[in-house]
Image 1 (cartoon, rainbow, N blue to C red):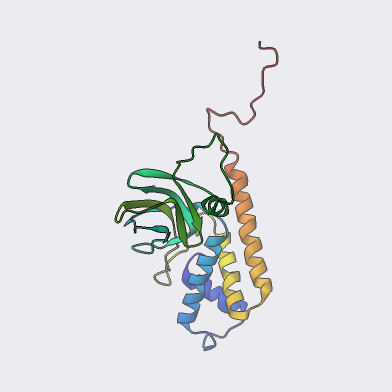
Image 2: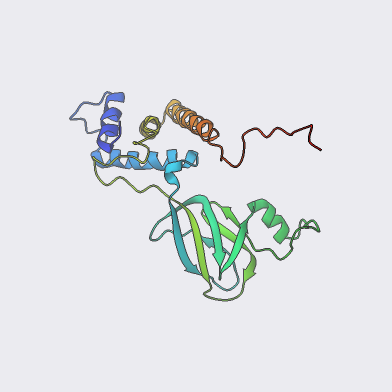
Length: 222
């Protein structure tokens, strides 16, 4: 099960729909596929979504937050990885910690640079500190894009080459949309978690050659 056509065929089989059934139109099923792919892709940071797009925009004087870019590509929520403004690199911080500091609810330890430039993701916005009062400074951001809708019935999902089990999760979410049966949503999440667990486990085996997995100290060395 790799293509949109195969997903829709399994969808019909799961619901025991006749070939001439008009309960769900083809356009509706195409929409189910696209919505399910977006949902499953949001559950974990899948390696297939490591598609960083560069966004170039301009600052607006006095603005402390900005909408995520949606053209020419749409960034996924909470996905900005790097941010520079006017050539200055901003460090990523937790949104709630940043807001506490901005609102004067907490102070910084003495050993932390107080003039560091920070940004924080919050849904489909990013917040910056300090606020810039100059119009039009260049903003460069990289982040993970939303999966593109499948273009036709022969299109494959982004997981079809190496994580095909996630297409089963996509099918379960399609069934959840159609039936509102929470069991399908639970199955979708469980399948995604299983695949993610296997991926993380395999990734942990890849240790850089300059960094031993177990570093045992030589207790006899002075």
